[in-house]
Amino acid sequence: MSEIGRGWRVLAGGIGACAGVAGVLGVAGTASAQPLPVQPVLPSPATVAQPVPAAPNAAAVQPGVTPATAGVAAVPVGVTAPAAPAPAVPVVPAQPAAPAIVPATSGTLADFLTTKGVTLQPQSSRDFRALNIVLPMPRGWQHIPDPNVPDAFAVIADRVGGNGLYSSNAQVIVYKLVGGDFDPKEAISHGFIDAQQLPAWRSTDASLTDFGGMPSSLIEGTYRENSMTLNTSRRHVLATVGPDRYLVSLAVTTSVDQVVAAADATEAIVKGFKVSVPSAAPAPAAPLAVPPAPALPAPPAPAVPAAVAPPPQLLGLQG
Image 1 (tube, helix red, strand yellow):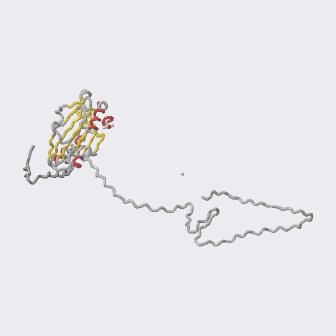
Image 2: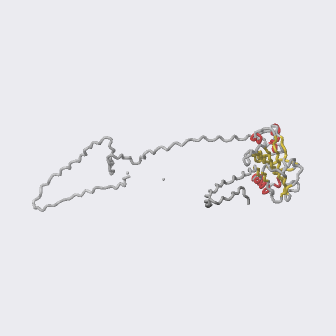
Image 3: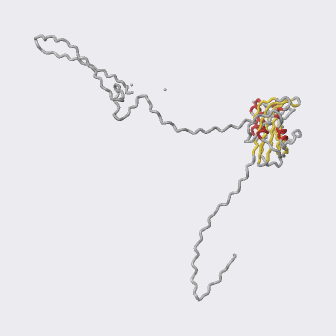
């Protein structure tokens, strides 16, 4: 009703230390007066690398890397061994969503029920116990008898505010639905029609979402009445109590020029309105089974002299 009230809205082993080999050239001198013959400088023999035949399937040995120990398989650096496959998770098929209710284009809710052979019996709030209905009472509002609301269950109105011509009010009507047979979802699709038939109707919001688990329609908007523009919120609820079915309707209406002034009150009514089925009375608890006390052994009978006869036994003695 906020819309109604406020606008009715990140190379391993390559610590590669470069080990440079420093060659030291040593020159030895010999004491002699004779000059030594000059020896020709022969070129140093070139070092020939002998190829070493590689063992079959041997892993290549890189400089600075110690060959793998025999019998131990070496895993190349940077290659991750494949992980074991995760167990398959069974796929649970998604539950199909409930089909959306398509709003009807004609026929009010009352008209639809009548065509299904349903009789609408108005209920009085005086001794009504079939449903729990909560209608908040804002400060300054009062219950009023209103002959302009046929079959009224309860009518409350603002007796403090207003513009002198129209008083903000809330009306509740309850019908018991007798006889006939109908689909509640199909029936509630007609919940917008009665408001849409009002003069110069303009919708501002609408919903067919369940209300307290019950099929319900909610529509909000403006219409014209007696040269005044009125703002209204209207809800229908279809409730089932055992074999009985009920239609509960709420209408909260105020004049457009009083929407802001009455916002807190009307929002409290729309948000605080509740319809619920009374919970069944709890069954009485079964009495606890108490095990019987163990029987005490009977005291031994006193010895009676043979010559004396036993006393008579009293049966059925009452104190």
